[in-house]
Image 1 (cartoon, one colour):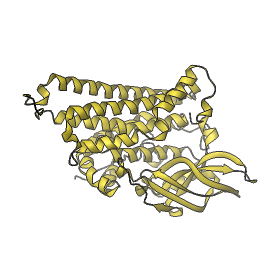
Image 2 (cartoon, helix red, strand yellow; image 1 turned 135 degrees about the vertical axis):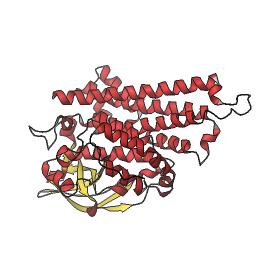
Image 3 (cartoon, helix red, strand yellow; image 1 turned 90 degrees about the horizontal axis):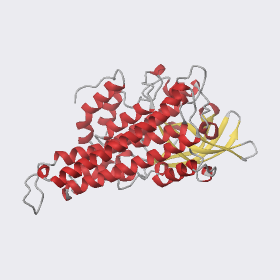
Image 4 (cartoon, one colour; image 1 turned 90 degrees about the vertical axis):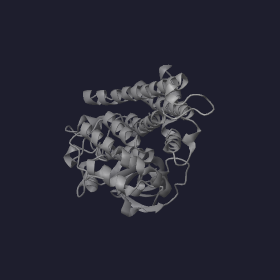
Length: 398
């Protein structure tokens, strides 16, 4: 593989990722066996800046919009699902880091701007208030990309000096303060290495605490008059839409492979090439259009994040609820497209040596991430459309 260099901007980054696609795909099977993305893939993506999409420009990052983030994860996911997934999660955590005060950003990127952060939103941590911060203990599974990260955001319940619940929050903690358990034994997304972080009486200073209640309303601790618009975007909509990117790429990968296999015959028929079959042609067209519709839906979701941020407007509840529905619908739609393509391709796609079955399993797991379950998004959006005010009884994460 040729030596890689840092991309100048997002379009050139996407071109470089496309050039790396054969390497990402070739490493995919070994990554699944090892249950972690191969270091060769990580190093190559690191070199071109694929993990710095959301990092502020002052640290050499691209300071990208939500659409940029989705585009990068989609491009990587088209080569390998697990690699695309951790690219998305690491960049998500980079955006969260940029919402914190300068002191926290310096903690992470001051000495090494290539430092990677992961995130587990689940508020599993228990805390107690101490002068200058919190002591936290807990375990956090599903830590995608944790093999490759030096820091992690971990969810916790904050309490006041009397031990009463105060807020939910994300605490930014260095790897050196955490234990680690190898727990990720699953059917899909194996290479995401979504293992378990462990904290035992770890001190977290106040400047590395991102409180949930103000964040849901667009109030971030690092915001100043000079904060770029991208770091004023809606909190939950941003976190939500990012989970779509790799899945869009996986869908395209399966379409690519179905088309690539179209010269083969259809068993038990007189058709020498699938491409000669009208039924196959229709299946390919319908699957491609289905994937196109998912792309368009997510593009609209990104517009409803990026445009209000640029205008200095925080999106209202209806818009934020619609975002939850957009992403759930897109994940569901990609799943449907892949099912069409698996049938069109034929049973050979389920052979272990065929990467289609790995892409299928990876997307099946990703689509069931609790944050983007379609039914939940539809319920929240339906309640908002009907003017109901009980959405928060389902989840406050809107």
